[in-house]
Image (tube, helix red, strand yellow):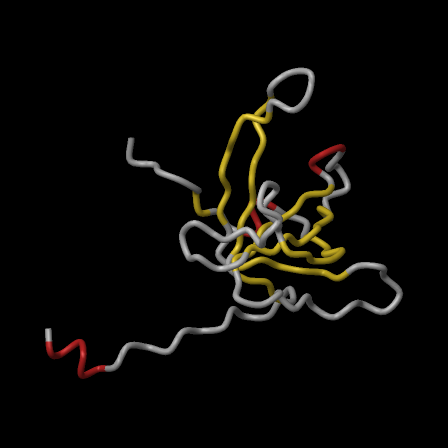
Length: 138
């Protein structure tokens, strides 16, 4: 099968009505009590507590955690005056389905990951283009 690991997904597909961040905390390895590292990048993982802005979202789908791999704790967008949480968007999201067997019956659940956070409506930071000379040398 050609699909291996997490599947890339757009923020608007996961949160079509937007999302609100409540806070962020480091992800700790349950057994070692040390910071958990992202297997692909080796960076520490941070869990952002998120509320789905969709009024039809219910139960476990209303509040989720999105894991972000970053060297330092992600800086959440500024609070909106009068609201207890912060509107947020995630950059370069991916989703990994898995079977959750912790309840009475097994169910399909989803682990959400992102490479960064930003204020809604702001463009993602652009990476610097590769040097032109390196391209011509090939």
